[in-house]
Image 1: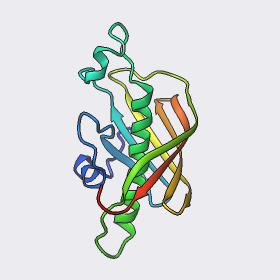
Image 2 (image 1 turned 135 degrees about the vertical axis):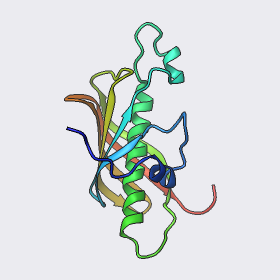
Image 3 (image 1 turned 90 degrees about the vertical axis):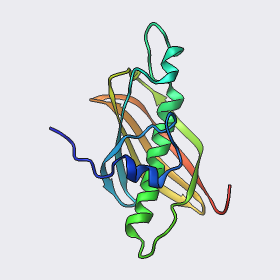
Length: 155
């Protein structure tokens, strides 16, 4: 069963500042404002880090899986602001601040598609917390809690 794309690459690029080769979200397949977002990332064998991680058996680096989850979490907040606001608001500038209780349980390989899930937990002033999980099929790749910080003004 094909999953419907809710937000594609162009909409994603309107929300977050990341660009290839450091953009780790291809499309959004589920979105409920302020609640949950599910995105996908197809892992391609020609990505530059696979040359050294690891040449004999390439796997997606855990730090990049976490960054994909952080980008997905940023998209949850950005698309929520964009779809629930009466006026044209600039999405907040978000930075990956912290992770806790993150566990990596399986590697992700070229040719696989990561499903990236982010659920809102809580907000405190300019800090946003999310339960996150990356899966490939029924296999959990990583799971934990991420915190993003919103920054006002110019960077």
